[in-house]
Length: 246
Figure 1 (cartoon, rainbow, N blue to C red):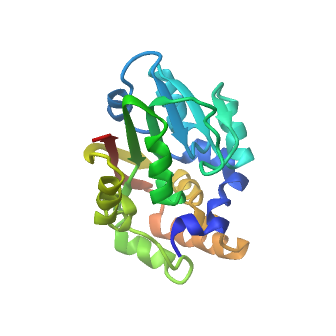
Figure 2 (cartoon, rainbow, N blue to C red):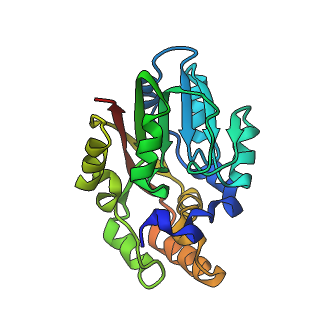
């Protein structure tokens, strides 16, 4: 089952909306600055969650409309002063609006890609672009192998960054077939998390949110043992796949 078909995981975030907004990372400033063509440019943020990327784009001068299906996540975004339409992208009606930029920030894997790209193509202004964004947090210390042991038997699809759709040849093929140029831009930054902040961050991911409560607590205990008091050193290999129309 692909993630966009797994509606249980897709709808799991609202129960942890405040925690998600507090602990999920923002996007590197240079990444955001490179996306906004100028003040007053129009941006559609699809699957906006709690508005993490939307707020950064708005602060950079864009006029942002956020689309988010989960009412609790949308409420957190709206509390930031953002314009939020509560709907799935599939059901959302643009009402004649077009956009200079359509963004999927950490959300493209939750839509059916072929139909989503077709819809995006009809929403872009002349010269408009699609941007697919991912923060890709990679643990440096403790090691990935240590974390694998902590997750073993609890989260079956514990996923390393190299296994995501953003790294797959399939994404390039889908974009090409939909008439988009595929321009990849990477932005690196070093991060450090306290033990508690790391655990609170990773437990906002759908594979953990959908666990039974006792399994979540076991995972938290294993992670505390794995990490100890030193926290987690990590890197964010943030990726922007910026896609003008051919």
